[in-house]
Image 1 (cartoon, helix red, strand yellow):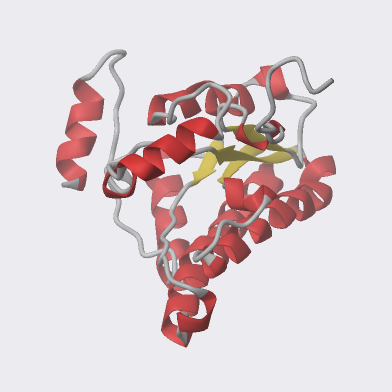
Image 2 (tube, rainbow, N blue to C red):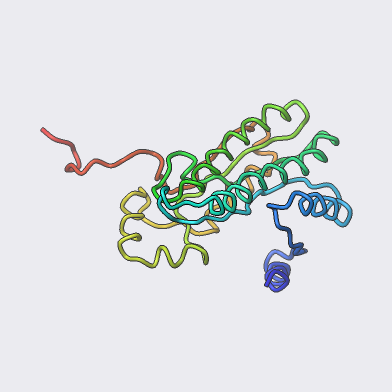
Length: 222
């Protein structure tokens, strides 16, 4: 599947050369080999988009040690050690940018996803901490926090009409997001246009974190 996806991306507009290199980010040794291979085959890494993530939905009282470790080892431990491995090469040459993927759970936790919420809260603090340490070495570190995004992994969840209605009702733009809604923010954070930005988490969420709407008539009460 990875090779097929890479081929599709390489043939689409605009033409690009996309390569698939499997890596289990919960395994630090695999991360080291991945970064070494990328640098060896393609040269210096200009931008890292740290996007690997998993989730297991269940009440906090039902979360097992395996559930907790599975989510945190990929979402937070893996994210840090990939950021560290790439960061070493960026710091050494004095340039580069990192974009970590946070979540609405970075702002406030949703129920029944405690390990995921913990991991995404950690991503925001990791982003700030790395920005502080690497800022004077030419490396910028930011994060994107997507809202409710309709993907192959979330399609089953959002196929429920009650969930869809709730998501639209709490999103000022009154729709679910799409993967392509993330593209503009990612390009901006990777480009010189954001040269004076680091340590920031940008919410691309259709306005979900802007606030809550009250169930009162528009125009307020008298």
